[in-house]
Image 1 (tube, rainbow over the protein chains, first blue to last red):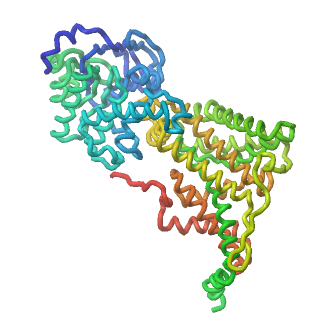
Image 2 (image 1 turned 180 degrees about the horizontal axis):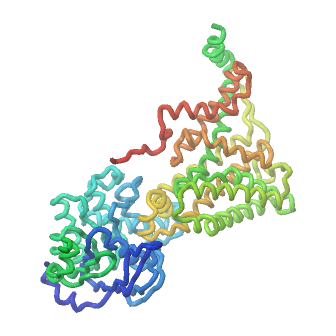
Image 3 (image 1 turned 60 degrees about the vertical axis):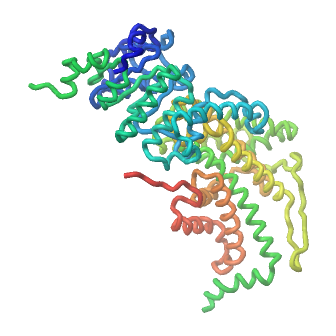
Length: 266
Length: 318
């Protein structure tokens, strides 16, 4: 558990709050009346058994899904509908459960793509590759190189990502999200399918991002050890309903959580 | 034995005997090939960014050319007509995005493919309604395209290059080069490639699919306009031109559906292969082989490279 900055996070201001959100696909209820909040600067874990609605929740937050009910308040602004483009523009970045990279492009281009919304020079200059557009490209390239250094992926800069091993692909994907300089970073199972060493590296990066850039992070994770180590607070979903919310220690002791994970004796 | 001689020896003897004719045929093939490349390029652009095989690409060529000529017939000066036509191609792109692609987002590719059939028939009807169905003459001279031919002596004979063909080749090369730079080097180009690779990842970094679709359809519209002008100048502007889209199919099979260099190389191989085949091997098979030879060439290539010359190799992890 992360003791040092625990207390002030606990009292911190709310960055995003989800109130009574329900989402269904046809007759299937993916999320029913879930409410929780994410405070500025914290690492918030969302856990739960398979099919609990965790990924659906992330998809609602970044605008991929529109909930049928409920209100989402981000940076003090409540919204009914938001498109992914607006979410990205507002400072929400994310990674995906099954790595979603631009497979035909190099690691560098993938991360540069994360700068899309930060680049504004018009097409005319871009085509000429001169003047303001060139200055802009160089400027952003500089920021991207910092991220590449931070994630220690200098050697694979020019490698098409499809050729990279899975662990590195996940890292490039994190880099692309970081390139957006987000206020809220959503990580969908950042450590799925990794070996212990890769998990440790990734944990380190997540903590560093949180500490150095002050980025608020919401992550879905199955590895309980990782959740205990990384997160300030945990929300537990099961069958689309929130069954627990609190510090990792509190949540682990919660009977409903134990039942959801281990099953209840009948 | 006679047939073997005619198939394998005689054509090469002819090539050697009259190198000027051979060069002439090669040039004709090259020019046709460049135009095939342009049509194929229109397909590739849209296929890359949206995964849609745009059946309407052929009719877009006709529609663009028809609009240009039709406007000029109604008394609009040539260059103004060109500018207006470019504007109309942009409106078409916006319309396609708003009325066709957006309502069908997340539908299977085959649905979008069928929608492009609908677009084809709409454009035929709409074009005919406004400009009539009669064949028209392309306003090549008014647009400043050169006329006449350059003849030069070669190996005891003459080779004749139509100036318009030279212009077509240059314009096509410039278009292809600028599209390639656009795709590789600019932010929007990067966004286009991103969309082609993964819709959801592109959305997550804030790329607007709507904007990208308008851009690719507009680019495809511009390519269609250039093709229409060049092709129209060589024959005439009529709805019969639509079938040149069918010529693009073997080019695409050959070059790979996602590759711009593939579209160019494929177009040139098909164009040259067709003309050489027709000229030297045509008589053996009773002529008229030009219409189907392209498909045979494409099939032969497919045997060895199923993903096309430059297409991405499809590897699935199991």
